[in-house]
Image (cartoon, rainbow, N blue to C red; front, side, top):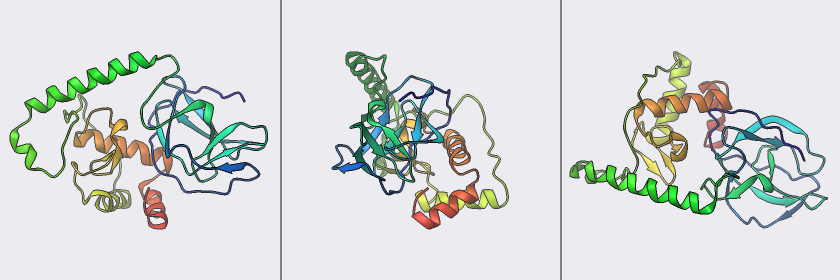
Length: 229
């Protein structure tokens, strides 16, 4: 199956609801989360079902992580992952878990990168004030501000909906953490790109919501129906 490579920005990882798997053979999940393993800066197409698939118009960026609802094999024997809401991706374009292993990166290179990242985190932690340990959330990532300012375009009902979601997700705290999700809008840490500042959280949250839902009010409506956004 040919998959068009298209430059993507601002694609975020999130949980998706389950859907019926058409004629495909459903099997036990071999993973709960997959990460797109394609070409840096590009994405893979999302299809509406494993058998007789049709392009949904959505693409997932390389390196983004997605919760798996179920695993299935098409009538031709190809393995697929169900991301929910009639969104399926071929297993050959993803890897299990949150770690990013791109097609042009060897395991040794990735391992070295991980070591360097851990060293950077350790160095950053050593410079933090000892009083930071009194917080019930440990910040192991850079909290430096971005070099450019950002002003959200959400006003009026949009701003109200944004604040409502923030309150539901974290109580409005920029340092709240739940597993891999962090901050005021409980964004995946990997998509904050190491910048946990309030400025970056606001920017990434806006990009995510406008890309996925079109507006904060639509995101709030989805949250009310599903308990997440």
